[in-house]
Length: 76
Image 1 (cartoon, rainbow, N blue to C red):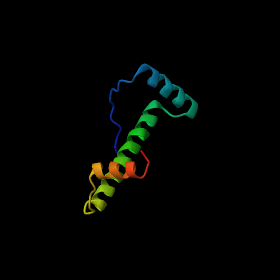
Image 2: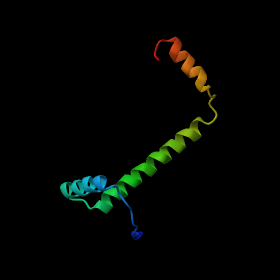
Image 3: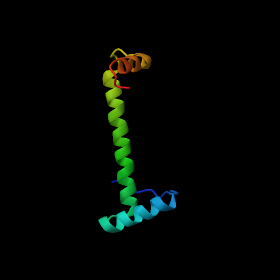
Image 4: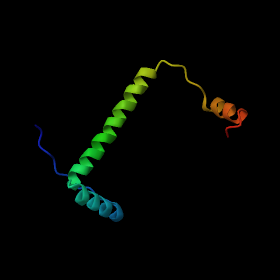
């Protein structure tokens, strides 16, 4: 099992206060909350990259055409 690495992170004071409160209420440490949040963010990035890879050969559609069709259909 890998050992944890110590890092210094600077938070907006209001976010830090909210994080402290959440940690206290959940019984978790701030480190555990931040670790899970970063892991989840990286997991989402990985899922996005996999989706991009799966769809890389699909034809693309110019944004201008998408907007034109939305306008035509009265959606914007």
